[in-house]
Picture 1 (tube, rainbow, N blue to C red):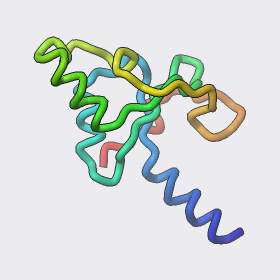
Picture 2: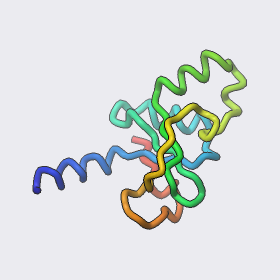
Picture 3: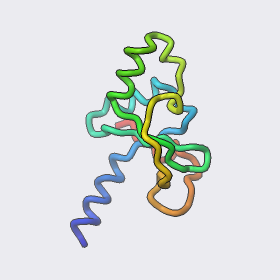
Length: 102
């Protein structure tokens, strides 16, 4: 059990969360940290609506070009998920409270 708690604590430190309204630039800035390979995108209720990886950002830039800088995180391709971002049954009060920039 101690090993699981240790792994869980380490994973929470690496968790990055953005709201759908965050910019592509915000996502890129977080993903530039090699210890944060994935961002969970949440709606206003704190529900995970998808994930963004470095590959997603590169794909959007390659296919959209300079116009991609005006996109928000909700427009970036991501997998759907109905799990809570916080890992608990309570919604997040503010997804930005859980963002880690490195």
